[in-house]
Image 1 (cartoon, rainbow over the protein chains, first blue to last red):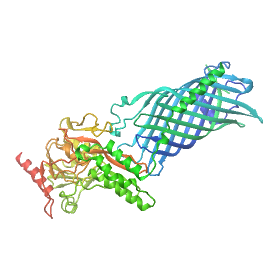
Image 2 (spheres, chains in turn orange, red; image 1 turned 120 degrees about the horizontal axis):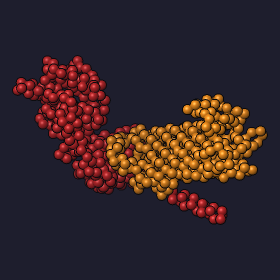
Image 3 (tube, rainbow over the protein chains, first blue to last red; image 1 turned 180 degrees about the vertical axis):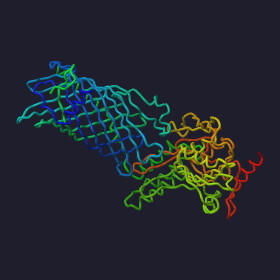
Image 4 (tube, chains in turn yellow, orange; image 1 turned 90 degrees about the vertical axis):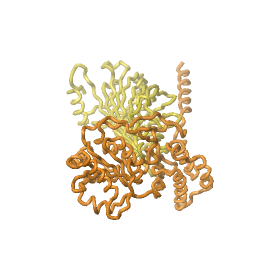
Length: 271
Length: 341
């Protein structure tokens, strides 16, 4: 507990260090704000395409499995909260949405120190709940994207120095492979949504559920802080013969990065 | 070796992308014909009461197709003409739960109550009965007949009230011989309120009806019968209750009248209720207009559809101009039952 309080305290103080010259960064935490457009279709709620805006807060961390900087395995955790509003094309109707997404993955990293390059790949367990409310529907106002997926995750990053500071350009991509998703019964009103709910879960894989997330980010180290700007894109598509669900979001990302080392066996952070 | 894996990778990406059927491309164009066909299809696949209405929906398509096939919307007035055409088509169903919502109008079907006696005069009610009344959220109540009988007027099942409200009202009537529960001209609202209003009158767990939702696009595709139950209340009200209804008691009010037939010491009095035994849902057309339609079919305990309305135990019509004949008859019946005791 003290360790995390300490992390929080130091983080608030923007006491971040530079992107390390040494390859291994024991712990990196990124808090970012995302804002952009969204397009969604939920044929349980409406046959129409809705488009609008979304805003979200995201937190992610990366950490080596142990302190040995020669090791290549690291793990990553992410949590996102997104809120959105989307209108039908004619602006007659509105869908509100709130999404929660979290996950954890392990990555194997190949490192080319002299070039500043790193490539990583690994599995990632993704859990998503994206609730939607159609403001005008009668007895059928709610729907949700609910899924648990094992994903394949990969990426490349390039760290370089210029004018006394450090930069990092990184591209990450994640695609679901196998999992479970929830499909509401097309004929059910919200009164009956709880009926036989277990039957509404199904095995999901690339053949019936595609969820692609990728982002390009650029990290910049300033005097006492490290900042991130970037672009993120997410595309979700799944459904049945009766109903299709899809969502696309493009976001501008602005975030702050904290990097520190956690000393195992001791209860404070070593900078 | 590396090249081989790169080729495999590229091939996989191409396969993945080609398997994407982007649903955003499947939007129908916003033409009058497409909207007409979308509306017709929504009703064809999702409407639950074709069996009750005896409407040949295919012939409706044939009858209206020509009108919309050649229609072009070039001016705003044409939108009204288009709306009226669709409204006319929907009114073939003679269902008060079927409405079309546009930014400039809402279609209304009044055929279900036309030609029936009104059996309700709000002026008489406020002048002679609800003169000095109390309000517990949506429940308006007072004592009538020399404070011997409780009277509750509930005008809309959309007006919320809690069980606490309702029990407070019943407590107010603690010394009364019975109560008159008036849901005339109640156009419906929330089914939850109907259950809540009926709850104090059931002394044992009772199946009060069944529902079926559509399970496929065919007119006969329904789920199995699902029972609707009232749970035993804890002795809230055991004295007589008379429910007043008329043809304008619709939808949730109709459902309430239906389930009150199975309550203890309850009598339904007035005219036949309005029906509306299909719980509505809504869906959108390509132009953004919404259509509301009956989607879940409700039945009484004998598995008879309640769409046509509920016949009262005692048919009483309003004739007087200075008193409410239905309330007077209800008072007489309660007093009579009390005296017999």
